[in-house]
Length: 300
Image 1 (cartoon, helix red, strand yellow):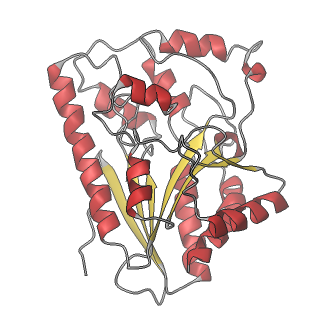
Image 2: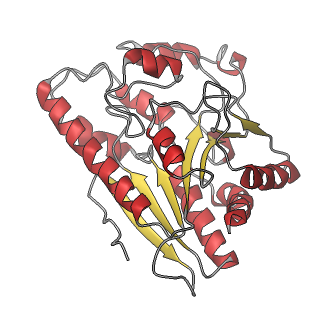
């Protein structure tokens, strides 16, 4: 048996949720690469950085981090092992804010790669000192190494869920030193509801050449369950599956055994608010955890 990775303070939380009859190796890995959702996560790194950060950058942190994803991951894991006690689920929650460095990126990809993939950069443009780059690259490498070790520890028929949440609407702003001012204008009361509403759930599986890597049976089960709740499920409506992301590498490494999923954040938050740490509602999480877990069991 390959040993399981351990938590690293302020980098990654590792949690194993086991069914009563589970075997020695995890069956499912749930990765939450944007799991730094607490103001304390932001403050821990901001206090160490020497770069001049944009004023009120914590506003960008809150609107751009995957609030609700950690809670949904834990609830779905418990639901899955309750339904299949022979299974166990390993959850990895990144605690490094993507406000500074994004642990779901191929960090050395070009700016053009990120634009093509419709994703933000790996290292944010306000990180301007060598000391900060060294610090952030160190925690990035530690997180990615932990994910790789967890993936290697999966059972032979193991699978991986890459879980994200996104803001309710597609807000088109440039990620630069004016990001906070631009976001505040975008979310002004007279503009906030004019941006396109995103799907309730979006399966990120299609590459730019149109190939869909999402597991059809799992997606079909998820779509059926979500539709019964009045929720729509899209297939790559928001983002492509792009080589500039770590997710792309996971999909190629585990063909047919990965699901990359975006869940609309207002379906989990109680209430949703763009510029503050959000309370995540237990009832909202439970409503989505059960159908998600049921869909994932199709793998076995």
